[in-house]
Amino acid sequence: MQAHSTAPQPTRFIDPVTLTRISNLELVARTVVEGFISGLHRSPRLGFSVNFAEYRHYHPGDDIRRIDWKVFGRTDRFYVKEYEGETNTGINLILDCSRSMAYGSRGITKLEYGQFLTACLGYFAFNQRDSVGFAAYDDRIQEYVPARGSVGHLNTVLHAIERLQPKDRSRFAPPLENVAERLRRRGIVVVVSDLYDEFDQVMTGLRNLAFRGNDIVVFHVLDPAELRFDFDKSAQFVDMETGDKMHVIPEYLRQEYLRLIRNQVAAFETECQKDRMDYMLIDTSQPLDQALYTYLVRRSQLY
Image 1 (cartoon, rainbow, N blue to C red):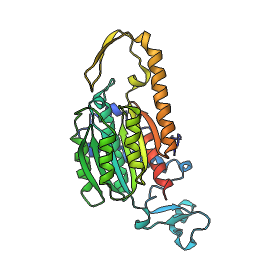
Image 2 (spheres, rainbow, N blue to C red):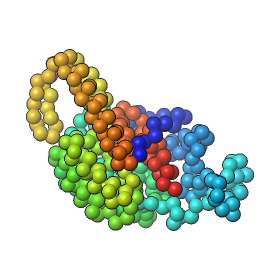
Image 3 (cartoon, one colour):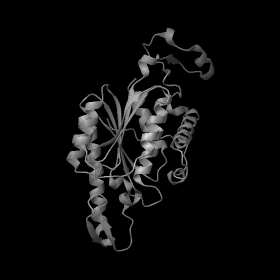
Image 4 (spheres, rainbow, N blue to C red):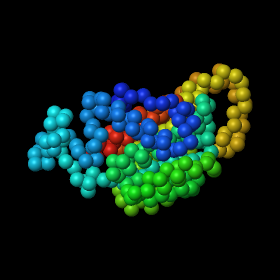
């Protein structure tokens, strides 16, 4: 299923580059997520309760004995009590830490942005009483933390995210198949990557996760320069994964490059939609609220 394009309007967060000045990843996650939750409070049109792990909107046919009348008295809206066993799920965050993720043209790399994004999603999910797991990969699994919901587990996840360094070339199919084999429980799997590999290999890796019954959310993270190719001087470009070099005159290449990147994004959108996976393109200059909202929409659709 394709991701909803509607994003929350009332809150715009700190520029991602500014977040790189905060040395503590937990503080970054808490700052962004608490701002996001505050934005939901101020935007009743979004239709979500910040306590949606415990309550959801009443739907015709629901048992009226489960309506929380105290909440109705405060909000003038009907909410049905959800019990912990009905709402908890497993959230597994998968972050690409290959060498191509080290690119950044404007003060933040794709990997840093991905670390912020996965940390925020983990913090958000954990505080909604979901179990949280994490994996990082390049051409193999570099970090793996099984999903748990115990006290202190979030710190284990955040430390695994924080110590990542870009290493080898990216490969999708083998490491994501490895992760899929380790997942013992169906849930939401969030993949954060620049999708820098052969198209068929990327889709094979994602399908390895989806075909086991997981709900997949793909955040395609690219630098603004990769999306707009706004270079204006002749230069030597170096592939960060292979080391291959090419002398480029931007004005001759720009239109063809932009056509190729548009076609690639369209292909990922189409194929993910066919396989009922949510896909969202993110550039690293964007605040993190759009990604959080996409995750929240997906989370709410499951219950």
